[in-house]
Length: 411
Image 1 (cartoon, rainbow, N blue to C red):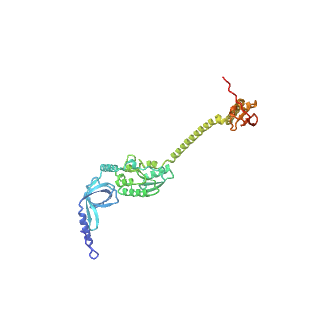
Image 2: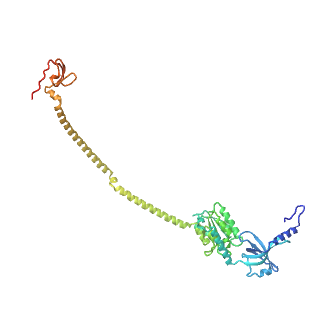
Image 3: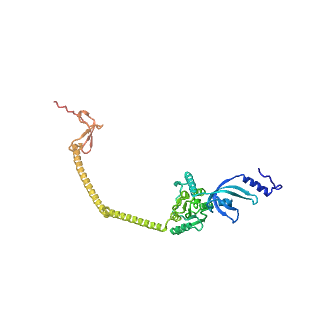
């Protein structure tokens, strides 16, 4: 039930402390896993004080352990070690402090840590975080590189020196963080999010030197791996040496075996690129020269053809052929006209020979009635009838005085 109180009826501090202690006491015994960040053993004191920190969160808790219990723990725990403790949550009324009263401590062995890493690996693999399809390609020449590494570490020196040796103009945005221990994961995640939000950062490198399995545990932490998978900027993992393989290598877009290898992967070598440019220019120049030679030969072949070597010869030949054809046409036409004129003259002579005018010219005449009909028989006309006579030259109008028909000759 809520404690009833007010400004007019406040409750004493001791009452509140007692109630809090009673509530905490109800939690019973709990088993807690964490990393020891501090051990305080005062000479002559009967209590050993430890600080237990969450491996992935910035949360610490005070632990008290009786010296007799602590001295029975073999081997003796050390700072930085991951442990599981069985403890009773307690609240000290006099100081108003909360702590865990340690009853038993077990150190997490390497075998168990590796087994947990394998379980997490299977889980994240089933979620598709290791799929090649989700990995982003690195830019050819990043203008600004984000580097997450330990403070004044050899890994930082390797990445910076080797990268600038390969491409002197490259720029870095460095974030120095803890790369092992309880604070490593939150600091690396914070730096990662900060660099991912930076508009000019083209690639992010997470680098540290080699170490034991315990030292590299932060780089197999689920919180860090999910943060890397959510990055919009390509991430390069450069953790440890060649044999070291934290889960970050599988989630990152590119895995570098060492920090030096990361420098080779994120920027090209300026000397190699200059050599490639020189080789490409030579190949291009050779290709252009060969093309020009080929075109020059083709042009020479075209120019050696008669149509281009002596173009007027062809025109002269065609002009001569045209003149000869024109002459042949003219002669043929003249011959045809002459031949047709001769034929026409013969035909005209025959027509004239058969013409009635020729007969009239010999003294004959054509007698016609008034209606134009030719009179062939004297019986066809009567005395006094007007007739027309056509002569070879001119016409006559006559009147019939008499008509004497000829009797037909007897057979």
